Length: 109
Image (cartoon, rainbow, N blue to C red):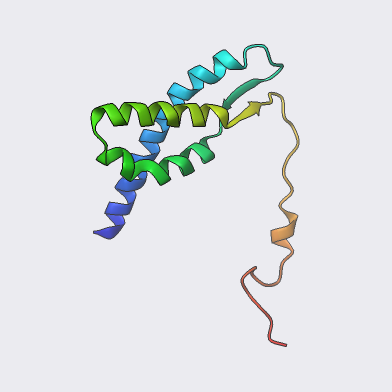
């Protein structure tokens, strides 16, 4: 039961974040039209902010909700990252492959 509840809570928060991020993306495109790169909303930061305010949004009245969403959209529109096309460098994952012990393992002295 609790696994389903966690799953549906995550789906709800991700969907709400995507809706708010989509509204913020329109604002980002207008403010960054003159820049060299295209920019997108940083979805990880948007999801973190939404997780912190999700319960508050569910409990607000309609007028308060509208004002709070406008503030949230403005905040998310400020947390942007550039879209760099043509990236060809692969990430090296050699650190984790060469480890003998897991990170949380502590040797006794």
